[in-house]
Length: 297
Ligand code: ASP
Image (tube, rainbow, N blue to C red; front, side, top):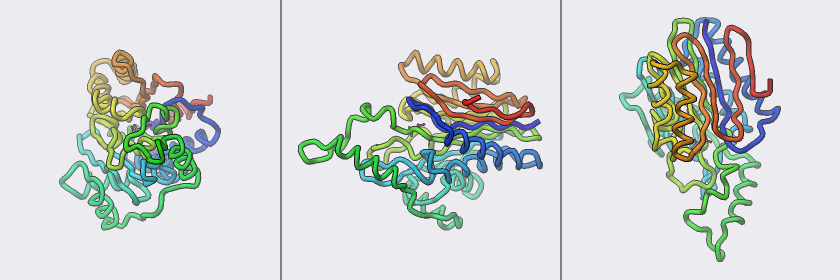
């Protein structure tokens, strides 16, 4: 039986009904595909597209704004046959996860960044537009006031002050299809008030997203820490020996040891799903043969 698990970001926030609605819509969209023989890659893409289109999440429409008030999205996808695709600092494509999948399927590359990535997405016929929402613009104005220093905005504000809001709402998914293939994907507007050009773990294979024939996982949290410790690769690598649930726990333990918390969802070759977070909260939902669950249940 197939399975799908999704997250809507880990951090210091209180997930609400809007998150639950968005997450359930995402697993339902994926489940329709999985039940009718769709691939794990199709399921992960469909789930993430639903969340990118929902402005409650920090991905696609409603992404965080960088220091200059501009959206720069990161996304990645990886399959159990080790194929992978990613985009970084994408400004206008509405669905970065679709661009990441096209990088995987239509190019000989793994990662496209910046203008090249946007131009590739346009050439592939992906819709583009202004991904900023009123809520994000207002938040950005507020942040600018907070960081104004003698009339000038500091080039590099102290982002620790924003920790509660930083990247909350990053989305990710991990799925197994009826043929036992695995996939994982991650999509994010990244850290709020980041320096233009900053690329986070959401675009980095091994950091935010990883898959092998044994397991697939998507991580969320402070991207710089996640990149330094390649947490998705670490958990997926361990899952072959100790199972995905223990592997997620052990990845969180490594994070704690190094002084950072993050969240993760994963799936393994027998379809078992796993989730864990060492933050105040992580919103998530799953659909497996024994029904569907969310963080609110
Ligand atoms: N990992 C994301 C980033 O640092 C943010 C998040 O997951 O909340 O870009």
